[in-house]
Image 1 (cartoon, rainbow, N blue to C red):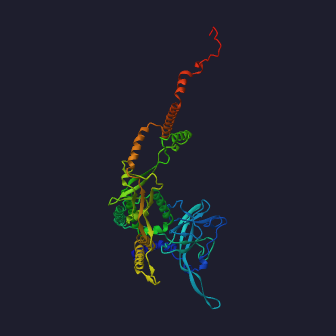
Image 2 (image 1 turned 180 degrees about the horizontal axis):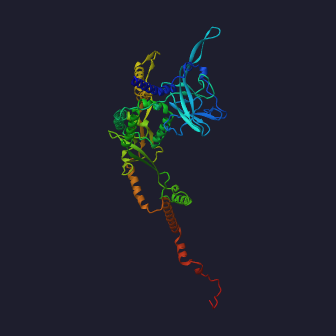
Image 3 (image 1 turned 30 degrees about the horizontal axis):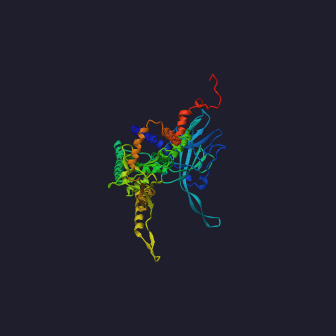
Length: 582
């Protein structure tokens, strides 16, 4: 009997020892009593009182201490460590999106640790009917779905904090009131005091824990959720992009500036819409892999799908030239060259001027040449059959094949002020005819566009809801597809060029060959000045010779043999004899 009694006593001690912590935990995370479950809106609405000139989350704690509540926001750049700088004080009316917060305490340094009871209540506001003093029935606001629980925490002296866990609310937003009291005091929910905080609580999907039973399960999750969607989207994008480039003759050739702007906009969107984006991607993580595959396919098509070559259009301007056989024109040109000697050499008369433009071309299956311009909209128009072919007014024999950065050179008419006109390929916005009226004014409905559009949008909504949990996302993508394929209609463009007359390139070639002899000149201005001065000097010599021809033979003989100078002039006899000395 003694052994049995001892065994029974041992069992009782073990059971009581195991039950004691469970009772403590139950009290620490249990309901606050029947009174707390019957809390009214008037008891839950007060938010406490902060000290004068103190931040909104500060509450008085005794005579010399104070409480403060800090929360950790959700976001891409948030540091989630306990000592992170991302923790901030609770703001009035803020929505806490995590399932925990920090209760800070400031007390004298060296003070002993103290226990506090933190009571929390979640509720919503609805309507209830009640009977007035007159016996009438009316409605008023009331607290609905009230849930209460409490936490017991121990906080040391000085600056110290305790982490307060909140019950999760992933399905919707709830109103929350939290208060702190000493263990021996009455409920601070049923008896509102100064040490209370009110806020909203809605758990973010980004706070969901990730649980896997084994390494193999985690590997399978990665393959199914990341690897296969990435591979599939990449293959589909590359195949579709290759087909589109073959029809469009070139990729979209997106400018580097657009890549930078899209990257900046994407980063800002992720930061601003992090809650919605994280909730969507957590529900459907394969969307991240699919988006990465599409981006990789677009980059590959953009970089390796170009089939264009350069074509140049050259137009010489002859209006600034002069006739070197005209003496008057030569004199005027020489004078102008002297006046412009200190100016810019390109302003000197007679300098050959030209206009040069470069265009990107792509050859078609039948030898036609189509202009290729950068841009997503032009690329989409070309992929759907629109083109901007080269139409020439003149003879194509003025085309010169070039070995260099461009492959073809076209000589334009030198007398045409605007020898080129370009209209790019584009889209025309044409909505389908949903309702039409005949000549008599009778209305006629066209059910096919209504039915097709409604079915497409409905299917997009369901696909978005099932695939990503967002019907609006599916509806947006479906509407974008309808607009891109059915509303925006591709339209052709045109590049018309007025080419120079036939064999004009032979004359230009002769002129450029002659210009090689001027390579040693310092500039066109120096060459022109020397040429003008030489022509002027030749013209002066020619004029002097003509003047000589106009003089009489006697004057030429007298001037040549008699009137050479004043010392050789003849002396006439005036009737006086010369002196002996003469």
